[in-house]
Image (cartoon, rainbow, N blue to C red; front, side, top):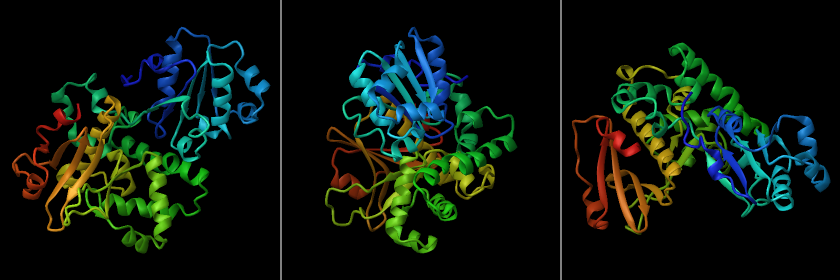
Length: 375
């Protein structure tokens, strides 16, 4: 069993606030919740949003029925809460009418997509995001040498818990294909009433082939035969589903800085490779640089979220080709990072970066020093 960053859920629970655990399917939210409940000191009730009777009670907006439902329990836990209509209002009723009752609810991407929780629980919730296993978690199971030895596996197969515990390559591939086909896209297709599974998958494939590069939505729209607004909406849904991360361009009004395009990264390398059905080892890949960049950025995102980093992240590029892959801005401090899988080349900072942003940091992250960046 892997140690998770939120194993001690109790420290995040407060009276008068619901604890909401977001994250993509199959990352371990249910396991995290059940492991906590087995050891918690409270009299608890665990239920599932899949339960029709639970849906009936909690979607009723009937104060007496909802309060009867939680009566006698110190903690109420609802797994897969996104399937309950008006769940946000039900949780608000519990928080307002029984503030001493601790509440924890888990939800996959659609929990956020359906916008059921946001407005009703304004000021009454604490949000946590659980990602596929991060290196900050895996360092409790492998030392740094072992993590580096497994770098090729992480770049190809990612870090979903079930994938990491799979017995062999074929099993890993089977799990990832099932994950993409039956889980990650399921919420979007079911709850957002998107009719074209093929268009959505084609969009993902185009983005997968452009990892690390700037993306033109107009070009993407032409290729998938959808209008630009629809493509933008699909990408927004994929972001909220924790499939993609959108990265905008950084600028302080230097005329030749690129800001009109974005880059898109997959929040798991295995998912990215499953989308394009490409599971070859690094020795047989032409996209190792993109895989490494995607992996390091994903792990940095996890690290920043888990450590409470409140800055902003961008890429930086000028029209004449100078670029910095990852820029972090926090409290007026700029740090720039360039990602190179090879340890041979050590390029210096772009001249316009040094000139325009005096005092800004710059580091090259490669396959030799990346652990210091993500742990």
